[in-house]
Length: 420
Image 1 (tube, rainbow, N blue to C red):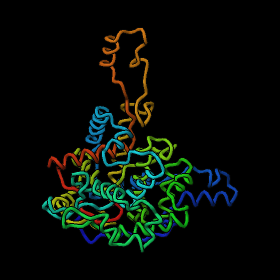
Image 2 (cartoon, rainbow, N blue to C red; image 1 turned 120 degrees about the vertical axis):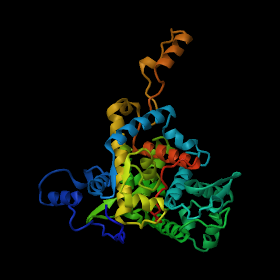
Image 3 (tube, rainbow, N blue to C red; image 1 turned 90 degrees about the vertical axis):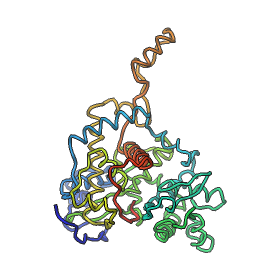
Image 4 (cartoon, helix red, strand yellow; image 1 turned 60 degrees about the horizontal axis):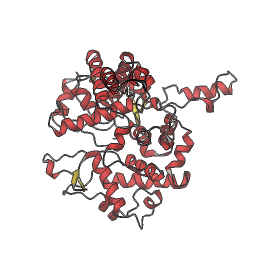
């Protein structure tokens, strides 16, 4: 296995992609211009091309690989546990910190949350000294520290989810934002200045281009999850999570995709969360899911990369190691999803939000209660749908639980970045 050299930095890419990568959208436009038939460009269904890039990364990775046998075994384990725990979109809303309302203010909250949803890990070895938010009598770390900070600010009367507020530097000062993200320890939130910049830039785009509300972005996407991801990455620089790998432009789009997924989960696939192509969203490439996939035996690392991660050494954003970890993880979750669908085709008819009742588990009125109870024991009451979003949510929650129990097989990799 190759030793770690100074990796290439994340590239600044023009919107048109790399010179050596054919762009299907541009080719389609050219065909139209030459009268070669085919669909009009505007009629083409939106594609994020994240999965395409993930497969390319997997096919060309050197230091990260997958175990086919372990991936298939993990798929069955994940399926059984998700069914046992009745894992669905409703699981998202059950957490005490996630919004319970279902209105435009909730959309504002989710946009703000995922705008700032990156880089919470600490270099502090003493957990009691790590950045955390004190709220509702508890101390919250990681992603939950962000959610707690936003909820706390709103309770204090600070309009932290309002784009007009973000761009008003007289009212929304850095001092006030430091107060919003104040820690219960001496360590402040990582990448504070980058978070301020994200708020300012996104506020400008929303106020100048979308009437000051992310709801208008959702409307413009016309019920397309892929369309909303593309709208985000095209209009908001801080959501444009893409780079070059072996000369090819690849899109990872962690925060753009998780924003769409959170809307879908929060609103149970209805209203602001209604998307007719939600299955185009992939797993969200961060540092927790690769850690969990390694725990399951799916993800295999070269000795040099594994020792680097175990030694808690940083991996630069945009380096080959980092891209291989993220891209291969996306592809692994896709393979897990396909294996579940192959073994349990009923998940497709179950619907992604919950159950599909059948005659076998819906007893006729004439049956006695005892007979009905017997049938309930014989057949599960619910079959819960599965997609990459729900698999990601499940793996993330499981990894956090394992970490709290100190049962993780490997630390997560250390990359300081706004992308995750």
